[in-house]
Image (cartoon, rainbow over all chains, first blue to last red; front, top):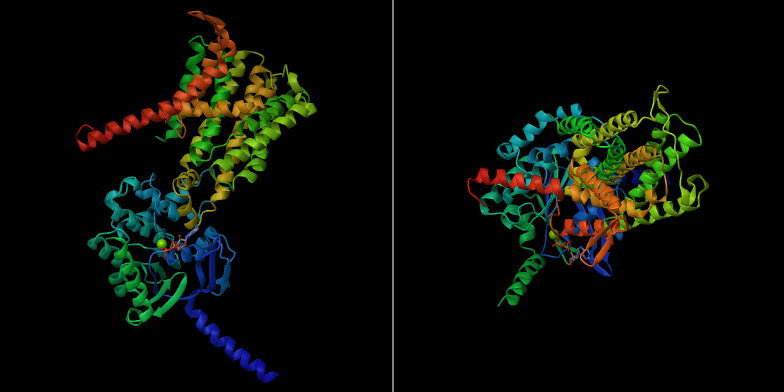
Length: 274
Length: 328
Ligand SMILES: Nc1ncnc2c1ncn2[C@@H]1O[C@H](COP(=O)(O)OP(=O)(O)O)[C@@H](O)[C@H]1O
Ligand SMILES: [Mg+2]
C-alpha cells in the first residue's frame, strides 16, 4: 500500500517535470463537421521555448487544429492543457489574455485603422474594458513609446500613418506579426505566415519570427519547407486529420509516410492539371 | 482640435442661429430630438456594424416614461428626462443581452421581434393611455425656477441636452473604447484573438445607444407634450434607419443632417394638402410613407454612403489624386 503510493508519487513527479517543459498539450483532439472528420484524435505537445511547425498537405486539418487550440471552434472530443491547466472549455478572448495569441491564414489586420492604430489596439487590451467607455486616453497615451518600439522593431515607422488596408502584401503580413508580438504572448500560433510572399519577404519574415521567438514558444503552420528546415525545432506532420509523423526536420523528411503524403498529393495535383 | 469639439462648436453655432433666423422653436426642438435619436442609432449600427430594427422601443419607452413621470408622478422636469435615459439603458440591456450573440440578419430579427413585443405591451398597458397616448404632458420648470412653458426657454434646455449627448457619443468614439469598437467592426476574429471580449463591448455600445435613444424620446415627449403609439411603432425604427442612410451612416454629422431633412420633409408634405398634377389630385399629407419610401430607394441605389459619406469620399478621392499627381 505504502509502496504503491511511493511509486505513484515518483511517477507523478516525473511527469510533472516533463510537463514543466511542455507549454501546450493536446490529447485526442477531434473535430467532426457534420460527419466529416477534419481532425481525427491528434496528440500534440509543444515544448516551452521551441519553434514547432505543423505541416501537411492542403485540407489536412492544420487550420482546424489551430481553431481548436484557440477555442475558435469547440472540439468534438479531446482535452487541451496550457501550462498544466485544463483550458478545453475556455473562451477564445480569455485564452488570448492567458498568453495564447494567434494570427490567421487570411488576414489578421484591421484594414481601416492606421498601422499605428493597429499596434495600439494590440497593446491597449490590458488597460481598456467594456465598462470603461469614458476617458482612458491618458492611460493609452502612455503606451506611445512602446508603440514606437514595435513600429521600429518591425520596420514599419515609415508607413505608420497609412491605413493598414493600403499596405503592400508583405507589409500586411509583417504587421500581423507585429500586433501578435505586441501582446507579449507566451505562445504564438502563426497560420502560414509566409503564404503568398516572394523570396525576399519570406526570408525577412523568417528572420523576424526567429528573432521574436526568443523567450517565447511558437507553433506555426507553414508550407515553405526551406523555412521550416531553417527555424523549426520540431515538426508534426498531419494528413487527413491524423498525425503521421513527428520529430526534427531530418527525421521527418525521410519518413516514408511523409514522403508519400507529400509526393502523393503533388502527383495528384499534376494529374488534375493537364 | 478634436472632431468632437469641432462638432460641438459647429452645432452650437447652428443651434443659436437657427431660431434667430425665424425658424419656429417647436420645429427646431422636434429636429433636435430626432437628430439625437439618429445619433444614438448611428452610435451602435454605424460604429458596431450590426443593424438594429428595434430602436423605436427605446425612443418610444423614453417618451412614455418621461410623460408618465412628469404628468402622473409629478416629477421635476430634470428627473423626468433622467428616467428616459435610465429606461432606455435598462431596456437596452435586456434586448441587447438577448440579441448580441447573434450575427447579421439574426441580430436584426431579434431586435425587431423584441421591439414588437414592447409595442404590443404598450398597446395593452394601462400607463400608456392606449390609442390616445399621454397627452398634455407638462413641461414644468428648470430646477424649479425657469418656466419651460415658454418655447424659447424649453428650446434652450433641449439644445443643451441634445448637444451634450451628441458630443458625449462622439467623445466616446475618440476614446480607447471607441477604437476597440472600430477594430471589432473591421475584423472581429482578430479583436477576439487579441483578447477583447467583443460581445461585452458590443453590449456596452448597445446600452449606451439605447439610453441616448430613450433620452431623445423623452425630449420629444416634453417638446410636443405627447407620447403615443407611433413613437414605439416599428416604422419609427425604419425612420431612424432612413435618416442615417440619407445623411451618412457611420459619420458623426450625417445622422443629424439626415434627421433634419426627414423631419423637414415630413412637415412640408403634411402641410401641402392636395396637389393637382395633370389629371391626378394627390394628397401628399396622406402619402408621407410613400414619398419617404421612394427617397429610401434612391438612397440605397444612388448614394449608398449618404450625403456626408459621399462628401467625405469625394474629398478623399481629391486628395488621393493630388497625392498621386494625376487625374483618376
Ligand atoms: N467550418 C467548417 N465546416 C466544414 N468543413 C470544414 C470547416 N473548416 C474546415 N473544414 C474542412 O476540414 C478540412 C481541413 O481543413 P483545414 O483545417 O482548413 O485544412 P488545412 O489548414 O490543413 O489546409 C478540409 O477538408 C475543410 O474543407
Ligand atoms: Mg489552413
